[in-house]
Amino acid sequence: MDEGRPTVRERSWLDVRLRQFRRAPRPVVRAVLSSLSVAVVLGLLLLAYDVAIAAGADLPGGDLRSLLTVIFVAIVLATGTIVTYLVVPQPTGPGGRPARSPWSAALGFFAAVPVAYLTLVVVAQVLEPLLLRLV
Image: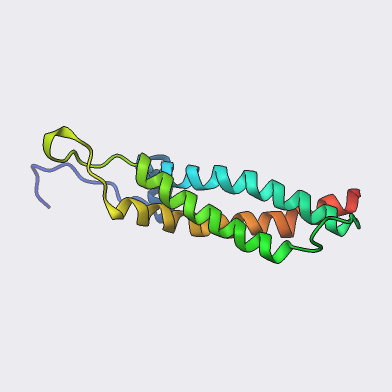
């Protein structure tokens, strides 16, 4: 070992992951939060519709749960992509104007995919059975 250098403590896998979680890059946090906020609101609306259909409510148009699920996913993906593209800071371009990059949109899209999926899982597999027991 080199005597001029201090020894570096080896961190465990869990220590490394916890540190990464606590110090997540702001663009990633913004991308996930923008998708998550839209997904939660739309997920609650989808849950209300689903519970109403399951409770026997006669809604116009019949049972549109499949169509609404596809629309939910499309809106969450589009919103995550667009909001992240607009909000994530980019390096300044010529003249000090912020430059836009397709990488921001890609970050938003790929952050929105698991958010949409996990929201649907929580709504359909956790919240819906709980609410249907109450109804």
